[in-house]
Image 1 (cartoon, rainbow, N blue to C red):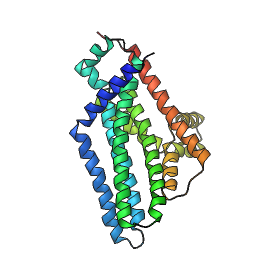
Image 2: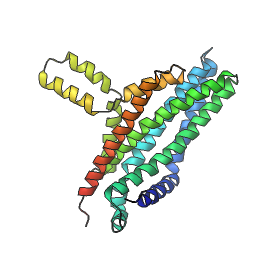
Image 3: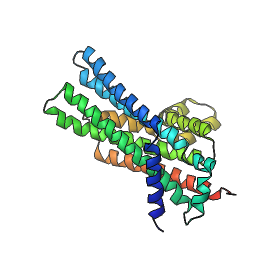
Image 4: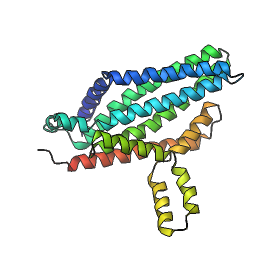
Length: 263
């Protein structure tokens, strides 16, 4: 079981995405959002740093998510459209190696972009408040940005899974719906308690358990941003849960790709 094909596919995917000018357009837009937070913060008495952090984290999460959705939706389909995957599968490359390589390549690209956006956000905060408290705040910013990246890992996995059997447009629709519903999954449990129809109640509970709980991840992220660590055990559990969910989606994507009939 060699990892060399996975590494080769991941590096090729990383180079391909980094050449895409659209990615840099979104990246610049995220930096503009952070700067916009600086402008709004200057208009808010005593709330300048908080405004910058809120808008900056929102920009990193949103722009990172958009890149994950659109790039992930094309990961497999583009290879099928160009028929380059047929050449890949003539070599000793299995379906899971192909899926894993594509996933790791996009994940590495987003890690670079998210880290750069996080550093830029930290520099803006330091420009506004260059006190000794900045270094403590920088630690919480780093952990919060890491939590954003964990969420993006699930979005990439979902986009790649949908791209194995749907067109890019449908993959985008499916992934965005998956992303949005994941942020409302906790509300499904509350909604199920209000339902009187047993079938709808069971369906609502089933969706709650099947969909990722991204709402808890967002809540934990903002608590961490302001130094209110929700607990190391909870953070470890949440991280393990998110990573496990991404792995399940990748396994499903590999199974679908394995069953695909290639001419």
